[in-house]
Structures are given as structure tokens and as C-alpha cells.
Amino acid sequence: MEAVASASQALSAALDASTVMGGTPYVLEVSSPGVDRPLTEHRHWARARGRLVRAALSDGRQVTDRLSEVDGDGVVIGSSRIAWADLRTGRIEIEFARPGDTTDDAADLDGSDLDDSDLDDSDLDDDEGPTDEEQEV
Image (cartoon, rainbow, N blue to C red; front, side, top):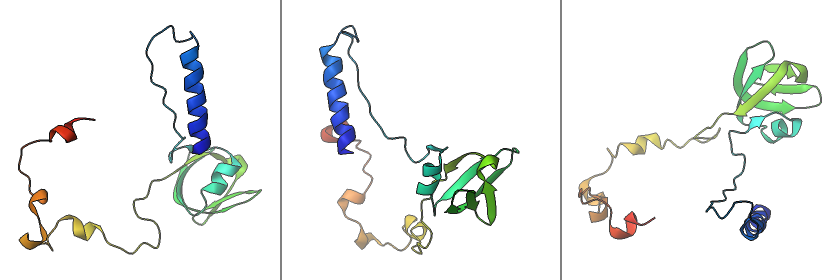
């Protein structure tokens, strides 16, 4: 991330010094490809081992399961071995709980196990809207 920040600052300085933008204000946004980056290369698949993936196959089918192996012959998704030639592309499926995570946070969402003594004034909805500090972004 430090290298990306340095490159972004250098690019911004170069743009500011040039006339390529014609004096028009601009916003330079730099980001990583993100979790939904397509898995198109062997190294992408290797990095995704252990993750839940959705793969598009050359015969038009899609397979969604955990990626367990990546080798020179192809990948293993769930119990299916898929050769590189049969694999078009894939994506990591976003999981909100990782495998082996046994905590059940959903049970806490409804607040049914809370009583009034668990709340303080900041938890109450007073319908006053955001404060001036919250309004400023």
C-alpha cells in the first residue's frame, strides 16, 4: 500500500505540473482491484486457495464451491477437478463469515437479549438528525 501511495503522489504531482488536464480540476482516485477481481491467471487462483469461488467453465456451466487445490494441471473446486483448458474465469464469492467461524453474530442483531440497563442515552433514537460535526464530511 505504501508503494501505491507513493506512486499516486508522484502521478498527482506530475499531473499538477503538466497541462494535460487543461487547468480543469480533477480528482485522482487510486484503488486496488478488490475482492471481486476476476481470477484469470494461475497466480490469482493460487492466491484464492481456501476461498469460496464461482468459476465459469468453457461448456457454459458455472461451479461455486471452495477452491482447495491449484496446480499445473488445473484447479479443484469442491470435489471437481477442472483443467485449465476448461476454465474460463472465476471470482471470489464474498463471505461474511469465514469457514470455521462458529460465532453466531446474527443472534445478537435483534437485541432481544438486551434490557434497558444495557443502553445509554447515545443508543436512543432521538430523531434530531446529525450534529454539525456529523454533517461535515
